[in-house]
Length: 289
Image (tube, rainbow, N blue to C red; front, side):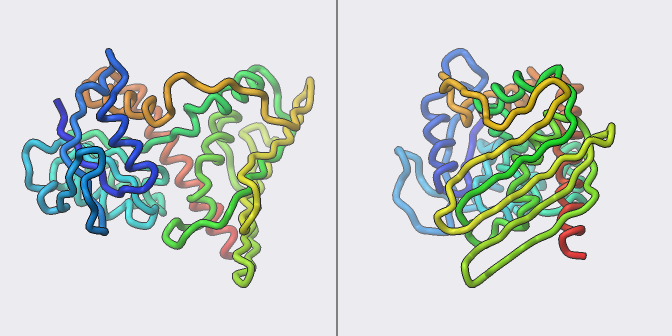
């Protein structure tokens, strides 16, 4: 059994606790047992789980794993603290706000023989799986992915990092991408922001990625993909999955802990994550120059 502490008790943190208390039977997730949670606030027990301190988490030998479910800006320091203490780490995306730090943390995990797992629940959604099936085998000519949503709280970082789920979609769907140009529009008085990134596929087909946020803007992904055989302007319909995406991610992570995931698969995932972080950083640089 792996003793677990959850850091951050927002929606994701509470879901993590719930899933560990009721894991999917017959999966590696049954090997996780929640020992406590960490929060900056002083809270009552959550579903029977007690609050503990970071210091206690670091020092206790019956705690082997930490789930980090806090704002993006705090991820890097938390990962480093718990890896240095010999704990496996599962962290929400983005694991860091810059590429260099991510490389350093992955090196630290490998040096200590620990699992560092960045959750990417957006790749587990039925919505994404349906889109992937529709795109498969088609030859892209050009395309746009335009995300809209409400403003984020402070501490979540630059849009190319906060929106890395969408960037990961594009990389997974169309292969390695390069950034050629990017702009950032902001109106702080109206809490409005719009990042536009111009990307190229490895065979020089153009893609545009837009992240637009303001109060009242509906959360939506708008696509316009032109292929050699057709054009897609709407997300394909997708049925609701029988297993929640956080539970799927927890099963994937616990399978790594149990040694049930091949080193080759772990390496492929690491390469993709670091590639997307480096691309997000390049987009940020282009916006700021």
